[in-house]
Length: 213
Image (cartoon, rainbow, N blue to C red):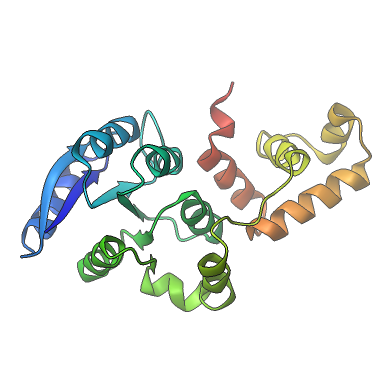
């Protein structure tokens, strides 16, 4: 029996997921969480097979909750369930230890496939994403468990860009040239598959960088 914990801050979404999971002969819902911190606690106390986890949640977002579970409940697989299809999100979640990444707008069958794959210790990527980011991307994750690392300085530059600072302001703050700022920005964006400023801001939100003030 695949024991599932559902973590989503919207109760109506959780109820829908519960009905779906409970209708399967090989699955049962053993717990529900309304925020990331509660999800981590339930994973520790209940030791479920799989936690289905929304990325945007209060207290602890999906990325940080996944990291916490990878350490405190390594026997539990995480299925990230989200409406975000950005490569940076996929990369960050898989890199943090999630076994599967599914879009909320996909069919229920997609989520059930992901839960079963995760329960068997396999990786699973939503079919609509797999078509786009398959090949090199999945190969990289299959062979290397960690996503490409950005340096501390590159992260610093991205954080300041996301907070609304110009290249000139960042150069002055970090005591480097504008040219160097541009190089760090370009390198970080390439490594994380970010396509523009909106992607940078989303990535910063995911990392929790914009909640520091």
